[in-house]
Length: 207
Image (cartoon, rainbow, N blue to C red; front, side):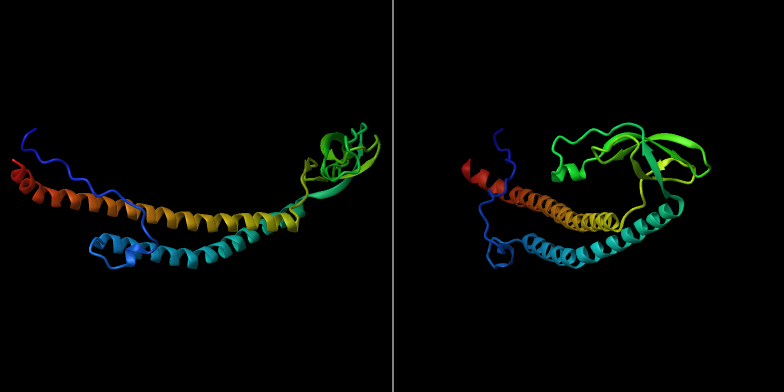
C-alpha cells in the first residue's frame, strides 16, 4: 500500500568475535552489554554452585542409601538353598562374561518359621542339581535382594551428585537463554519504534 511504513527489521547477525559485547563500538547496544554481564554472572554462579550442589546431593544420597542398607541388613538374612535342577552352562565358560552372567533357577529352602519353600532366584551358570547356594530372605521368608553393598551406595550417590551438577549447569544455560530472548524482544521493539520515527521521512523523500 502506497505511503505505508514497512515493518522494521534488525540488521542480519554476522559472525561475532568472542567477547564482542565488552568492546566499545558505536553499534553496541545497552542490551548487548547487559547480556554480557548476565552471562558472566551466570557463569560465575554455575562455577560456584555446581560443586556445592554436587557435594550436598552426593552426601544426602549417601546417607539415604546407607539408611536403606542398614534397614535391609536388619530384616534380611542369608540362608542356604538347594538347586532343584541343573543350571545351563554359559556358551563361553571361563570368559569374563560368564563370570558376570546369572541364570534363573528353582531352589528349595526353609524359611525362618521352618516351612519348606520353593522359589526362583538367579545363580551362576553350570551348577548341577542339589548344589547349595546362598540366598537372602526377608522377615516373612520371601526371597529378596541382598542389602545394598558399599560400592552400590557409592555408585548411586555419585549418580545423584552428577545429576545435581548437570541440573545447575542446565539451569544456568536456560536462564541465559531466557534472558537473551527477553533482551532480543526489547531490541526488536526498539527497532520498531526507531523505524516508526524514521520511516515516514524516508517514504516522504521517496515520494
